[in-house]
Length: 124
Image (cartoon, rainbow, N blue to C red; front, top):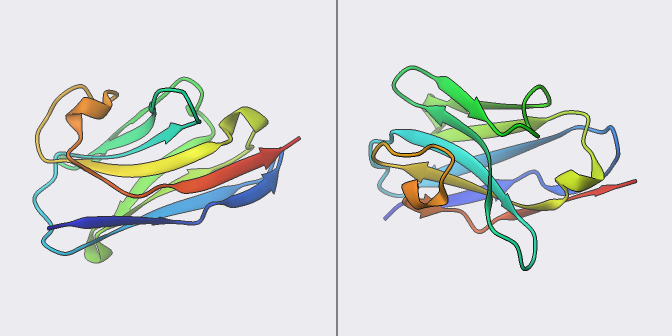
């Protein structure tokens, strides 16, 4: 059974940068997509970014485009979310996730495995 563990969250100020990482452990299945979502209390889990492993094509939400970058390190079974120019509205719990099969890359229902989440707080 694979487990995903996020790291790198914290409290930052508007305009700062953060790098989130996701490490996979256990039996690591072949993946189709690696992704990041975020969620605030009482709200839906929103898509942030995804990477298609077959060709490293990346996808971003409108709010993440131009500021966030998703990347992966195959040798370490990790993937990252580099976040630049953070804004208070980026405050959320960020979850890394992986999908074995294809589907809507921006839908949480496509993804099979989730981390526990890491809090990102951006103060104004």
